[in-house]
Structures are given as C-alpha cells and as structure tokens.
Length: 261
Image (cartoon, rainbow, N blue to C red; front, top):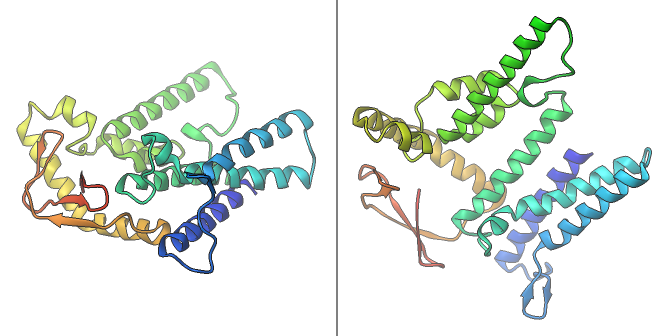
C-alpha cells in the first residue's frame, strides 16, 4: 500500500501540475495564501509527521495500518515531487534542475519496490547466522559491496550504484567502468592522465548520443518537459572538462540561466 500511495500520488500530482501549466480552464489553479504559492510539499510534510506519530504510538491493526501506509506513501510523494525545490531553496519545478525531483521519486519508489519483493540493501536478507567464518565472509561481502556502491556514486553512475545496493553485481560493474568526465572520481584520478580523461569523454558522448535523448523523452513523458531552452552549438567546458563541438549549451529562456546538457 505504501508503494501504491507513492506512485498514484506522484502521477496525480504531475497530471494536476501539467494541467495548471497548460492553463486548462476547468482545472483548479495553484493553492495560494495571499500572494504566497502553497506548494504541495507543505501539506505532505506535516501529514508524514502525523501519520508517523500515529503509527508508532497507536500500533493500529488491519485494515487501518494499510490505510496509514497508503496515506504515508501519498504524503511522501508530495515531498519527493518537490525535492528539487527543497534542495535549491527556490521554485525550480519546471526548470532543468527540477529533474532532480524525478530522480528522488525514482529512488524512493525503487527502494520501496525492492523491499516489497524481499530485496534488502547491500544484499542482506536476514540476520547473519552460522559459524564465525561464514559471518566474516558475509560481513566482508557487505563491506566490499558498499565500497563498490560508493565508487559508482563517485564516478557519477548513480543508477547502477543505487540498484547495486540491492543487486550487488550492478555495483561491481559500475565500479570497474570509467567514471563520467565531470565526476568527482575523474577530478581525482583523470586530470593528470589525459589519455584516460579523453576515453572518459568519448564514452560519455557515446552514451549520451545513444541514451541521453531517450532518458530526456521518458522524463518529459512522466513529469512534463522543463522550461523551453535554446540550444546553441558552442564548445562547452563542464567544470573544467572540455567537450567537443557536438555538445550544446542550453540557455533557459525564462530564467536567463545557463545549464549544460
């Protein structure tokens, strides 16, 4: 029920905000208190608190516990959907930075889904048991998997690292792949190794050509397209890492800000 609450609420929120954005005449507009736009996370945060307190103190039984889980999932979805606003402390809902909210929803949904089907983080499916050797091997495997997950994150391979928390082979594969050229790992390991940095750039460009547009279209379909951008065929340096002329500089028309894609 928790998973259902998250997914249904997120889809309903996005449908509502897209209708408001398009100016659908029969659809209710944004909630306002005077001149203040009341975002839906303002409703979700206290709802999560109240539901959590009730669950921990009252210890309800079926069917009320399922109803609470559904409501808690819905409240969590309102916060996940505006995660980018909390991170940037400004309204970036329809800007490029607003895509971070979609990432937050995906992480929350996938975490819940993995738990529902019985997959636990770091491959831990239950209390350790058996001999001391078995326990040591299990602990070593958990530490190794956690190290691979951390390496994947440092290489800016967040999706594989996240899935690797539950399915360790993904974390291992990500740890042995080249880091993205703008990642923390690249700054640490590739800046003094031009050949490896060049390979990382080539791999990143190939990946973006093959999957970048598909990812953007999927995100646009689920969450709505960000503010209109103008693509300029300029050479772009991403945090000190130079790219070829096939990259573009995205200019946010509404906010007159520059973002790289």
